[in-house]
Length: 346
Ligand code: C2O
Image 1: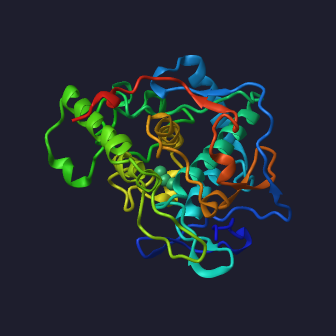
Image 2: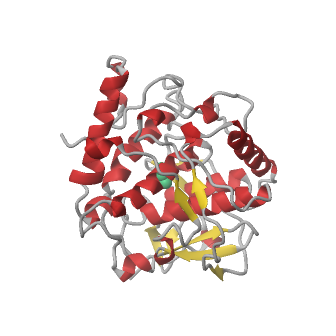
């Protein structure tokens, strides 16, 4: 059976690596839950590459996020509540509905892509509504392209910007180059040259998107059904580069690499949503590559899995995986950027 949306009135402890953390990331509750259907689309929102946008766009995103940060913490649209969504769904705060004691987890399985797509969808809709611009589209960190090989400047260059976060890696500030296969043990190594790092990243992308992602389960991750304990079977992109980028981005001085380095805190960094924009974009790109297996899963247990979010009108809505498959139905697409790694067959 599919994993149903959690009962948010039964939100509990936050845990990481077997420890209970002194944080509360449970959302406000609501008596009414609406079954969400994507609204009719008049104009597609185009999510831009973060390194290519101009001043005007950055000012707009900054203003939207500033307003989101200014909302009271009890408002489900506030930035702190948005960040806590990730914490609640990813650090064992919820049990699966109907299976007390069995954790709900949206990583390391086929729930990864659809959960995060919906998460960004509502984040984007809320930002748009706060500035009265329903066409507002969040940027993506184009880390599969040489232009995105460092933390995007919009998040790092202005300490007073709403896009800035102080809890980031000190060692990896721009222009430090991103290694898509980063692990802590690599830190001792030499500083990479631009061309070498680009080549290495392209090879990694080709492997994770093409040669190592030839089947649905390789790309999406293992199946995860109601009543099952979360297992560790991430899809190719989730495993690498998604997770290494989290660890690379978080502050190495903090116990759990906060913010980006741990699920409970990752959503507190605005860069998170740009990182996941690109993760989400990879799902769209993968389906556009040739090959008959590169299609969405048709198993009803996947399609009927559900999540809860608050929308831009503070309504608690229930969404399904089935409704997430086509970004155009959700009203957005990604800016077309070339894919240098597609030619990187080793
Ligand atoms: Cu929910 Cu990047 O993780």
